[in-house]
Length: 237
Image (tube, rainbow, N blue to C red; front, side):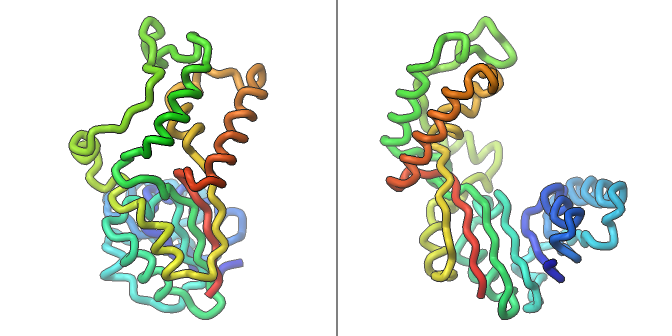
């Protein structure tokens, strides 16, 4: 069991709560800048009987959390929201005691979702092979979703969430610099994230198991060639 862990950008802390409930973490320090998410997180922790082990902080972790005795620094799909991933990873290493674990499961793809030409081509080709019924709009069946995958407008993306994938394309390089000992597994995403994300609700997982298996195999092959949107990394210091 990890004695003392920290997570930044935790939202309501639902993933962290799972680790506490499973007996993997004894005490979790959770940093979040949204007061409403913290309120919800505390309420959920109380309902699960975990309130005394899940300590929420409405603060900038990089400025306020300077302890150096954590044995787990945990990033789960929040590192890609940090404006400076080098700073975030330097902070992470600085918080770990000797023998502590850095654990990351995060989006590491292009900043602001500006997909590579290769990713766009593969995702579009995969959608072109899908039958029309899989391209129905989930809330308006009379409309069809586009088979062509495009890059989003940076301006529109930032208007919705200015933190979205702010510095994500530098995560892997920063990880190699700060945690050269890290074991990193590229977990894909060109197909399942870019090509299938908006149509999965239309696909019957049981009837189309072979299609989904093929999609994951293609994703794996692309990840092995460097086209990945997600990665998992573990490093012991």
